[in-house]
Image (cartoon, rainbow, N blue to C red; front, side, top):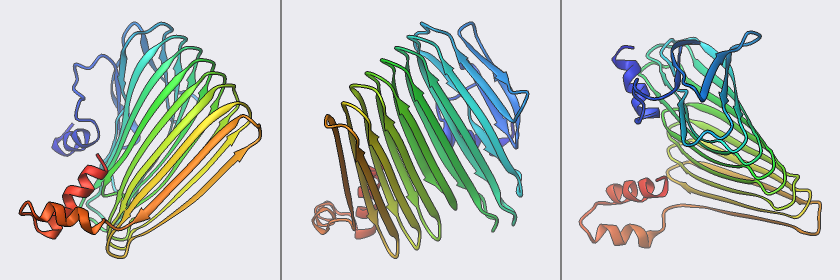
Length: 305
């Protein structure tokens, strides 16, 4: 890997090093480095582009890194990664994609990640997206996440779009069985003429299943964001969706909530708040010696932390 590759890796996964216990690094559409162990295996798919990650049952505190970097202008990379999480396993998965584009053709990564959680398993999934480069070609990232949770499993998903992504369509779908818990935290920053669309589709099929979605975003410049949520409660369950956004300059944010209770014991909540930075917050920080721009930066950094 050259210095640009290492810079991209640091942006999307600053904890990665080649001594990590298991990983697969993908660059410009191909796996370039891989490491497995006795309880985490990574296998290249034979029928399509991508990998299968197998985490053995009863694995304790396993960690696997699957970063993607793209430095080739004009490349459209589509990959299908399936995660098979054994019963009672506990694993952290570090994903994400960084694109460097110094030329005039678009560079795009479409990552389809499917999670199959067996009974009693636990997953913490972290993904970061980042774009850089001086060319006029766009940096496009379209992540799709599908989650299938069996009884008593749980998953936490932290998704961050750092900066520099021109266009993104982010889709998350989930099917929850009995006594499952899904927590999703999303943070997005858009600037200039960037666009970001996010869609969550969750079906609470099992008794005592629950989902909590928190989306925080900042739209600067002339950027446009759209947030959609579609939560269906089919039995006794709980859902809480929060969408909070800050708009600056000519930024625009649209929130489209949909909650559908199909059972008398389905408890579904949606909250949304969109607006500019409160004036009293700015004034408070400016009394500490910051100018208005510096105060805004402090507030935004804390909001997206």
